[in-house]
Image (cartoon, rainbow, N blue to C red; front, side):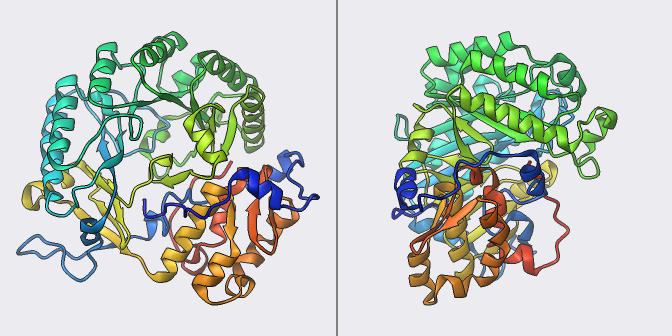
Length: 487
């Protein structure tokens, strides 16, 4: 993404050497500390965050986006590309889900949607330089809602427009629902070049599963995990959630123990954001079953302790990886990057997002498609694209964009590099930000030297809080945006 971290980043080992010997990196976490920083905060998959995007004017006669703000024009000069494809369809409703989704058993809707998505891809044919796609991700909804024939049609259609490759030097991933994924589909996906698989587990406790309407057995996951490994998927990831209705510390620990037996390469342990006033599906959750904030914090501590004691490396931002996984190795070597799909090993100069609500970016800014599936397909049918809002980056945006991604990917900010870019002392240019960060310094979450500002080991839990201090728009503008809680 445009938020790629710079090549001048120090490795974690070098950062540790640069810290003072008394740096409080090993001070224990406490429920009180976690509670202090547990409030709502952006996740910073982009800067500015998507809630800042503004409507783009569309010419009524031609259907083209009017005005000078056309960040997609920068696609013609990129050297590498990421692709994101949004497949919104699901067979059943998971009550916790806040994704852009369509619940249906009418497969024709998905097949028709795919027609429009491939037409949108054609709109980019003359706008994107002929460069390799280093990262491709199918998200949803449930991308494996598509049958094998349509998964093949999708990839062939994308290959007609973009330069798709196979091998270890690309990262092609797909989100899968283990309740409906067939072994034959794993064969199809591998033949199409996919080498990463992410499965949404959430929790293995039957009572919790009933409360969120997502019943999945450990045996289903075990069968798919073993089959995926046999077929050569290089990295298998599980998504877990803490803070779900009916969960307790003890029940979550049992889920973690089951997960450890299955030994996925990566684990994402998300905090459940209960926002029933925004997401209708969450209104189906019995509020009496929701654990209190103190219990959620205890869950986070217990689950994370179990994972790290089992040998998983905590990367920050809810993510864990086995020490031999390429992502853990990249983090240790300072090669980690971040984009709308989360942490990645394959950063690119730009991202093209296809499908309803998908976001794209270039060096000049961001643009987003219509969120509603019907509005998306109507727009594609009329003009070949469904862009409705976006953001043109300013010089200050780019400065803070790079700073935030450095902080979240490599746990440090190079003060001297920023002074070179701004022409001003770091402490002067960012005096407001340093004032906001003072409690984090005092709590041993951050440290600094003449050379850099860095995140301590326990500060990894609070990367979002540290990044938020540098977000001009978060502090200088009123917003109705509601963010998920950090913990």
